[in-house]
Amino acid sequence: MAPAAAGVNGGAMRGRRVPPPRPRFTAPPGLDDIADLAERALADIPQPLRGMVAGVSIQVEDFPDEATERDMGLESPFDLLGLYVGTPFGEQSVTESREHVDVIQLYRRPILDYWCDSGEDLPHIVRHVLIHEIGHHFGFSDEDMERLENE
Figure 1 (cartoon, one colour):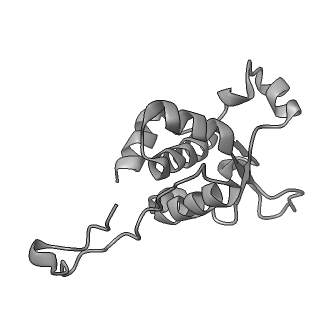
Figure 2 (cartoon, one colour; figure 1 turned 90 degrees about the horizontal axis):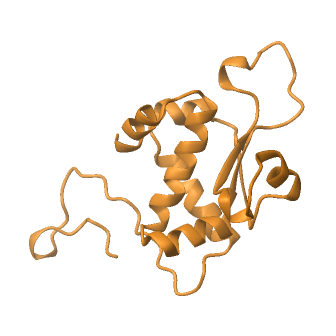
Figure 3 (cartoon, one colour; figure 1 turned 30 degrees about the vertical axis):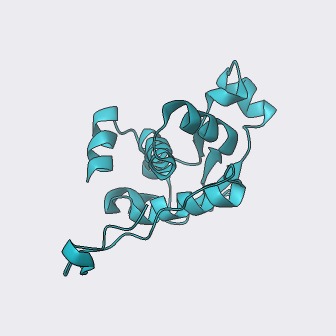
């Protein structure tokens, strides 16, 4: 897919931000590919969310671990695309030290399975999972998250 930078007769569009080209995959994206998509998506999400997750670690694994599967009551490891693990933003204290860094966990194989089944754009799926995990963690409704995704 070519970036949306070319205008009529190939001239550059002035005054418009040109997004970086989206990656094309000829093989299943690996862990690093999903992490790269997540970092790009995080850098591009609306400021209210980006500010709330400053310092949050993004980790990509193939599947949730057995404890997460059990704790979440999953029937299959493919049932979970992502998970936010950490202290809610409104409960964080500046006077107490925190033992762990907040983490957004993305699960590559369930994301790829969803991508193949849905036919949606992979960067869009990764961005949606990020916003979904961040939003629910901070108590946003589905409507709030949809509005933020569309900004």
